[in-house]
Length: 452
Image 1: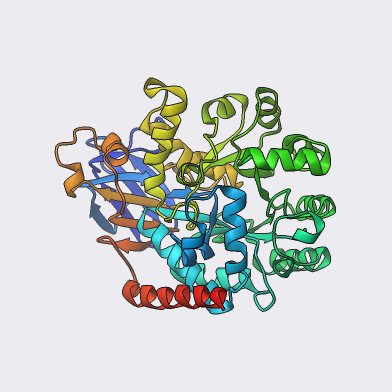
Image 2: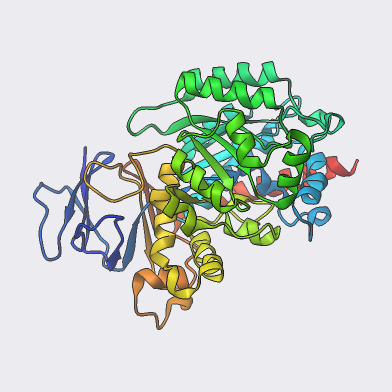
């Protein structure tokens, strides 16, 4: 195993208080040493990477996404709508997904994430029409080929429009089919060990698209096999009204009723909680994934990040679907999160360092990972390196602040599990232009199917 020294970075944020001004030493897939300023590594180094022009961070972690939605960015029928109407416009389009579209959507999203400094991503795929029963298998294959670490969630929808749910009937599955496939995916792909590149979580889409029985059975299976649980919750007031009408419960009360109120659960969005609910969520150790661009695009509201963290919840960061963002650029979300949270709490209460924490340590806790999220001895070598040589950084003074405030959008180098996946701002071993040509053709084909 080669030993690599990322030497003397321009700036470094480790997520710890340890001095790493002299750089980071990696052996195999693990960080073995942080080097103090003007010091030398204590181990023999095989390769030195000059990091003097780089801002070095733990690899960014995307705790909520929908890869397939890269195929419907800026889709005309879904423009200028809020969540429920936006979903109703897009569900019939997404029902036309096939295996090639799924593969290309996953590849494109993964490539975009890696280029933005993301080393681990959780994807929430819940839409499995007839013919796409192996959607998660396709994602496993595609993300492994690109070298992206993943927590792929087996999503589900079982409550159709004719049963009082939101999705069209032809986009849902039976509960037994969902549970059987969840068990198969855990058995075949879940790698719970230190350094696992692929993990599986279970993720019914939302209270308005699955039955209560499925929520309870999913919780039972997840507990039995020690995997994480994930769903959308409290994204909009409409969802709150739905839960009150359908179940006679507010969303958090419903979550507790179905056995989800514990520390193996993380929730996407989590905007519309009251004070008492925030305390309960924090006490239970539930994670919340903040999705700032999506929340602004759909006008859903602003997550209460600081209060959630103070109560004990982990707050992570996610790009959400590329049809409600409309991108998969995680470093851009640091800027969006900083600004929208300042809008809630004030400029003096939210720092760019908070955004670093949300996108690394917070997201790692969200998805149940203790081996990523900081640059420290014994942690996995997932690292993002950014240059500040583009025009928007000219005249900046604090490199860490500039990365967020001046609008970084592309990493120069990205390492996942000790292997370089991005060098000189380009993906290694991927013909990005060819991928884009195929992806655009798939997007056109999906739109054409919807028009027929």
